[in-house]
Image (cartoon, rainbow, N blue to C red; front, side):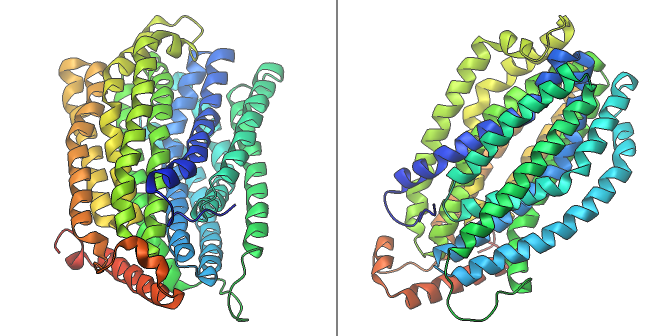
Length: 488
């Protein structure tokens, strides 16, 4: 069902909307963890290292899918917030056609560059073949991943976070079952892990798209004019949001690949231990990402409706929820770090286990810090402050890579682990400061003489005209550097 995030108490609206998103994130991590878990438990530490090593490269391609998801979701949410259903449907059509072209191009590039990328990150010869085969199969199904992300982004933009959750839950459970059948029963090795992901992503994408089209047909739009297949004005609006998000994730992936190269130099045991620890770390961090994504759509709908005060109230509630989630994961990973790592590593490789435990003990105490940054970044993205969002992200990444390179020499692999909290401690105040600056400027909206909540008392035509002007002004700010919110 669609959910209007422009009415009701902000904290209540965010909580109800985000709960299914949180569940989706957990199942998404289960989806990702399943490959490593099955490889580590039923094949061995080298297989775990191979899957983990390959996964860092897949994140480059996932970055594009994530950016397309966010761009489509935010722009769809703005049109939905303005009650412009024609705009919603045109955004969907434009996003699907363009993303299909992107998927074909990136699949061809990925298949051709797999070996050079594995050589670039100094992949251990022991795991090279398995990493290569995993990537070739995974990338062959990239169009499914991208299509699925577009569909779920549209559901989220309409305020429906439950449907993506149900799809992801079913797909994740199926992936675990197929993983075990292919690896334990059919003895397909690492290739079995990759084929399980390929099949489950394919089925999920087809079903999600089918349900999305059914949902959109139920939304009536004004006029008899046909919906444009590709609207270049809307494509520009999507790109303004999507490209910084893609660059953010891509640069994070490049940074992680560089760091993966540093780790690989220590040996397969280090790669295996890191592969286990980073899966657990990602589960904690991406749980807060659910709140960040929730704030993006909450902010986008309220920008479309011309209600900035709701955004200012909502962010602090989201930060409070993020702190609670972070503290829960911190307590679990600090108290049970070794048992958690041993879920993945069952062959008694003490060096790999120790590496994973060391990572968790260093990084987890700082989860509350990164939670604030993630939620502030989500709000910046939803309010179209994309330059601010991009700057905050790149600073975090740059610091992590630089400190990894500096500290690995005197401190060994432990120095690499410390680059995470150092980057977070410096980047978080910058992100939140940029949010405060944007909020002080009312996110580019003109202040009204009446409270924001009275917008609903205006006629639809007045609100729509005002919101359209706001969106176009904000889009112009993001495109033209000389007019961005840092120089207002």
